[in-house]
Length: 350
Image 1 (tube, helix red, strand yellow):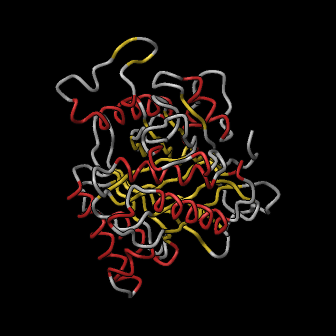
Image 2: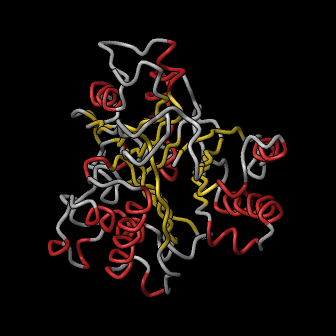
């Protein structure tokens, strides 16, 4: 299999013109699109509008109903862009026959997708949801051909909002953590959800939205079954200022440097998936911040994403970075989770 990511700009939440052009020029086949993640501006209504725009276009090209598009292609819309964040979307492409020179001697980028069944209202934010997400992550990992848990680098989940959203995000994150064996299932009780923050995943980012009725999962990692020319790494920034932790994530992806990325290395970066946790605690390195107390307190998650986008963006020279925010068992409290995807040069990974 050949797995690719294609990043496209959005001029407004319903702008799918870049994808339409790719389809018209036959640079992308509609049947090869297995998932979409978008960084959209606006609120939940804008996310729903973006989702509908993709449904309309892809239903025409695939000759299936809009509902079938929604059911079969995970579309994760991450709303609210603050600071310098640029709205964009990433297409997850899986071709049955590879077009690269990769022979399987090295592990390369792969992904798998899966969904839970439609969640009942009283299942959202419960251990039932947790267990269903665990099964979905395991299924997506198997689909990706990722044999070792160490080779899983990033799990993206979009879950139903339910009541308040945070418990749904918590159940999803811990479900992924169980699947990745980062947390023992027997250590989790109903009152652990969004309460016991000693339990977390270092590889999972979760968003929740009213437009979802099931938990949608994308597992990304590296596999010998992949013919891709991409590779994904992962790491943890202990706080929003941890540049060494950020650099280690890029080194894990094969971009090794003692200081800054070169222009050539920056051009190798296909996208970076970030989960920002700065709003989880009220201090950074012993100094207080006002994310939760200043005039923008109601937008704490947006501020946290904007900070992470600026820090990581300054390193890669790019504002089109996928940033989500969540402290619900998504890394240690206050940390950022980083997963860079890079294009491997002819000389291979350094």
